[in-house]
Amino acid sequence: MGKHNRQVVGLDIGSTKVSAVVGEVTSEDDLEIIGIGSRPSKGTRKGVIVDAKSTMNAVLKAIEDAEMMAGTRIDAVYVGVGGGQVEGLTTEVSMELATKEVTQRELQQVIELARSQTPTDQYETLHVVPIDYRLDAEVGLSNPIGRIGTKLGVCAQVIAASVPAIETLMKVLDQAKLTVQDIMAQPLASARAVLTTEERDMGVALLDIGGGTTDLVVYGAGTLRHVSSLIVGGNHITHDLAVGLRTPVTEAERVKKLYGRALQSLISADDTIEAQGLGSNEILPIPRKLIGEIIECRVEEIFALALDRIQQQDLYSGLSAGVVITGGASVMPGMTEIAEAVFERPVRLGLPVQISGLTDLVNTPMYATGVGLALFGRDWLLEREAYHAHYPGVSATFRRFTTWVQNFFA
Image (cartoon, rainbow, N blue to C red; front, side):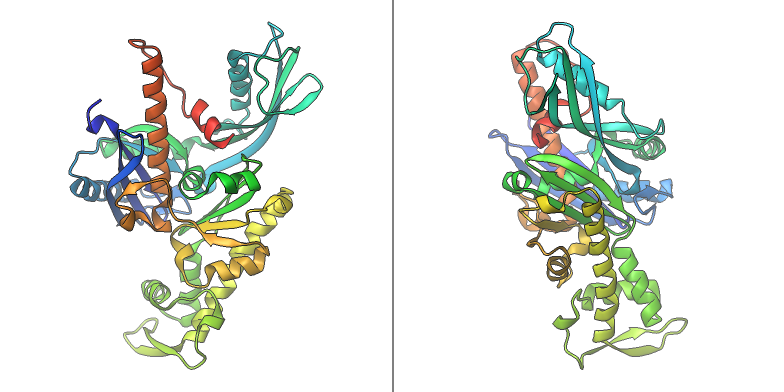
């Protein structure tokens, strides 16, 4: 297979930026990052595309940047959908066994049955991740293949996305002349990039703190247990600063990036900075303690909301590996310390792993989703190659991330 036939591209369309990550699957089946591109975007709000033209322009510019760095042409991408457009549902379904023996065929049939369990007809299932299986009265089975019984059931996480959101996304990428190789939930992509197998086995919560939303993913015993989204993120911190400091939003964003600390104790009591006043060009002195107070209040709220969601799902006691935070807003100094105080669990910053190449450029939480999408593209490519090696000359139609996603999260 030629070099460019083993190229995968992850496209992350977020609330504040669009980023593209280009990877090359090496002869050792590793993912080597060969190019990245990132551009600001104002066409998305809280995970929803509200301005298709603006979003398309940002996509085109990010793709062009990535093409120049990678020295290759990009015409197909793995793209994510997230924020409030994605919902996770824990469901249990069962079916009668015709042959009395569980085979791979019956396993796939019960998973497809779970796939139909969407929140409403306005949602399309993206992923079905089995938690465990039931065979007659026996529960908690991880792999019932080869066993004899009459009724097979599965408890699974069904991850679905809004149909209008998917249609808008497909329209934007079609106008950008990009083929969509597949769509996946952004929270799962971030998890693919930054979590370790040991963390998933022990039990861990991932918070991907973006501009408009904070995505939450929880794992226990190596299996996906919960996916949801909080409609609050880094943009809310910026807005709080704009109101509290009486400064324009653009100035508040600058202040946040240059001087922001999530923990007031990291700031000297007599430190001041200068910022533009609201409605004038007047430069005003502002105590950094005030900036820290505003930021800390909002950050504590984000983590408290996430904790409450985890406790509602009765998953808090299972977080033996603690909490991982990622996303652009997670890099602010003091974030991990506040998270540890709120969750009373160890907290670390989530950086992309299992990659080579331009790691110095993508080794940051802001590229977690893009890298995760590229990693899933790598996994999908290897799955397809393995199929064709086993069945040479046979054409196969692969369903969206059905088997290998469940293998990764199982």
